[in-house]
Image (tube, rainbow, N blue to C red; front, side, top):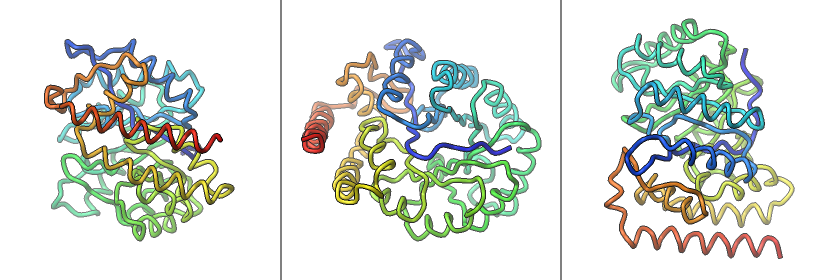
Length: 306
């Protein structure tokens, strides 16, 4: 059942909106092409970067279907989108997402149990979900909102042993935990993708399968080169790691508005409109940070090609 997830870079996709607040599918089409042109290995649609908690179910389903159709098999597409608190509503949400044709449906770890509920309760609900949403591979996303529920290596192994899971977006930002999780699922179809830029190269050396994080909305090609060639280009890999680790600090500054600004400066018709943040609070200094980071990126890119 579990699919063979390609290793490499899986951007957590943003959602472009028109200035009136509707999903901008014309811009989304160009954004999908931009990701693919930069060599990404897959697309993670309908996630927190997509502002999924601020999208209606119909919008989440429509976006997942649109991205899948536009990718047209060139890269695989996975999607999440179960945001409700009630279990039965989550079942419906995940069934609807599964029907869009995505290659895997991603469970949000904090949706399956409250912060004070046990791992045993969490896993019981996982078993119920995979029974209610059959015939599609699954992933897990340790989403930090509304609270971060990290999976222990033991719990992750239980998920892997079901044979239904192919993808973990790890948000622990902790190399010791990452190493233990990789060891726990060794030999299974479940692969770990690191969401944290600062620990990326070290995690790849431990056996992580790639990167799935917000910074692939800024410099996907840098992440592609790092994940594809870290072993063959160790000196260059260290240079790339130094850049991506420092550059990732910008995600603390008005994301995803700053990512939308960056993409607009790259020529994509992406407005700054967001539902999760107020775009009017995006000030000139925020714009300068994005522009100056891009200048550093271009210097790095030029030095690598010289």
